[in-house]
Amino acid sequence: MDTTSREEQKRLAALRALRYVEEGSVLGVGTGSTVAYFIDALGAKRGFIEAAVSSSEQSSARLKQHGIRVVDLNSAGELALYVDGADECDPHKHLIKGGGAALTREKIIAAASKTFVCMIDAAKRVDVLGAFPLPIEVIPMARSYVAREIAKRGGNPVWRDGVVTDNGNVVLDVHGWQISDPVALERELNQITGVVCVGLFAQRPADIVLIGDSVME
Image 1 (tube, rainbow, N blue to C red):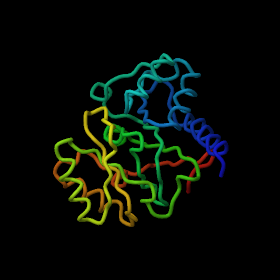
Image 2 (spheres, rainbow, N blue to C red):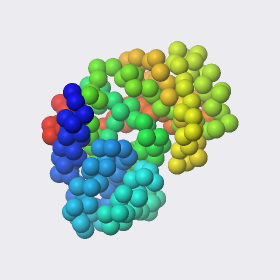
Image 3 (spheres, rainbow, N blue to C red):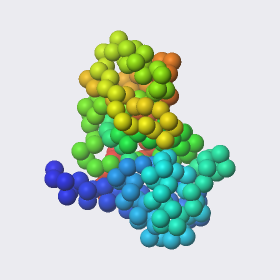
Image 4 (cartoon, rainbow, N blue to C red):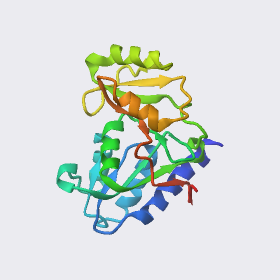
C-alpha cells in the first residue's frame, strides 16, 4: 500500500467519524496524524460542537486554531464520544497507542467516554499486537527499574530519548513482544511501580473502529 492511499484512508476515516459527533456536545479528541484530519474536518463545521476535551497540547493548539473551545475534563464530566487513532488494532478492537507520547491523557479520556471511535488505515490492522513497539509512560526516576522489570518479562525496552510527555514523564518503547493476551499484560504492567500508563487499550478497547470509509466488523 503506498503512502498516498494510506493518507487517503486516514482522511476518509476522519470524515466518517464526524457522523458520530452530536451537535452541541462536548467531544473527547485524541492525538496523531489521523486526528489532525478529523480536527480539520470538524473545524469546517464551525460552531457544531460546544467544546472539546483534548489529549495533548498539540491537539489543543489545532482545535483552538479552528476556533473550537478546549475545556478541562474535570469540568466536562462524562463524555458521550471520544475520537482517536491507533498504532495497531487487533480483531477484538484492542489497541496499541502512544506513538505520539500522549497515551496517558488518551487513556483517561477514553475511560471517561461512553463511546470510543478509533480511526485507522488498513496497515494498522493486525492479527496479534506487538509489531509496533509498546509505549509505556514512566516516572523519570523509575526508568531503569521499570526497564529491568520489562526485560524479566521478555520485552526489550528502549528509552525514547529526548521525549518528555505533557505530564513531564519519559517513554519506554518495548520491542519483541507478541501480545496474545493484551488484557492480562496490561493488568500486569500496570502493577510495576513507576509505570504511569501502558499503551495497551485492552481493558477498555475501542467500541467502533473505522478503516477508511468502512467499519471494522
